[in-house]
Image (tube, rainbow, N blue to C red; front, side, top):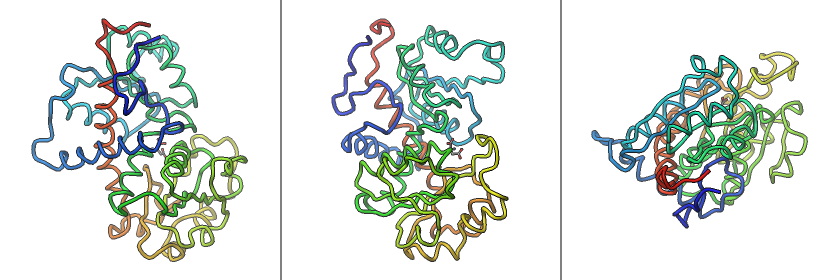
Length: 322
Ligand code: ASP
């Protein structure tokens, strides 16, 4: 067993998911992120909090926002950041996930930020290394930093999370973003609806404490937040809907459907967006209501806070045992 983490406010070595975090722990991460939103708007964005620390980004799936923002976050805190390109690594030669992780671990990184196509793979990896591990998205399971950045975006705009009515719409079945958001929003006292075709909702989703709708206008009624999800075709085997055109007709967010939500409802999307599939371009680019760009900005701040808090819990390599 590794030594116990130092922080009592956030007594975790890893951030593998939102499930199981307490409201206080989530608030701590959000409050710490606020500070970095302000810092990132200054000319000098750099500080030395993580000087001497090493962060490795290990992404087994494509990523634009998450990987770049982990890299920027680490660099802005003064850490050394390495991006491991799986396409040119020994993974291509058949090395297993665990062997890759153990090889990297032997080089004494302090944090591994990992994305993997299989749900649960990152938890498995975290049991084999003695540094901190951050889940950057595992299969259809969790994407905790996305949920944190979504929550902070909402909290900054609406002043709170508690009592808000949030609709998560689209391909819920394949979405780790939806799962992490459901856990976080429920933990923080928001009410969550999911709106999706019957084929794109997991059968037991109600057990997570959400209301399920299959009609956009009914589900969006009086919502404060409209969170759209990408149709994740790369995870689909077989046909889940008749055609993209029909999907957009029933489930794509346009002004007509949006009219059911509150007039000041925020529009969110984790990216990458499929314009004209799950969201109409006019709505996505309506910067009075769409906070999609703000989500990306706040993502860097959230990852800085997570890196700072987890790094404080990691002893020097000589004192780690595994
Ligand atoms: N970027 C998010 C994720 O990695 C959402 C998506 O890909 O649709 O889960």
